[in-house]
Length: 133
Image (cartoon, rainbow, N blue to C red):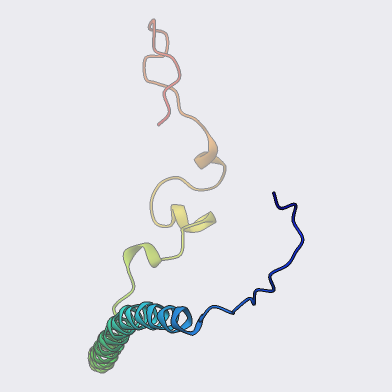
């Protein structure tokens, strides 16, 4: 029995790992090209979507500009018409309220008599109460 050690002087040879390295490189290239293809496809979709969005935003800006010009022309026409027609007549509610002496001008009693409360003709009847005339 051999108890380790020994004799025969064998040489250790390094295995050829270049073939494994080449196989790994080919697999990495295949995965990388597949990844790059999907990424390029997604980037192309993104670019086309961004172009479409820019186009729609440009159309929206043109629409807003057109609407603003229409509103401005309508307002200008309204101002011209208002200048031709002139200001509207004052409304009835625009008159100053009647106060003091102006309330009694022309009719009714004046002076101290205007402040008195008159009595009813038949004040002795039941349930007559206070009648203001």
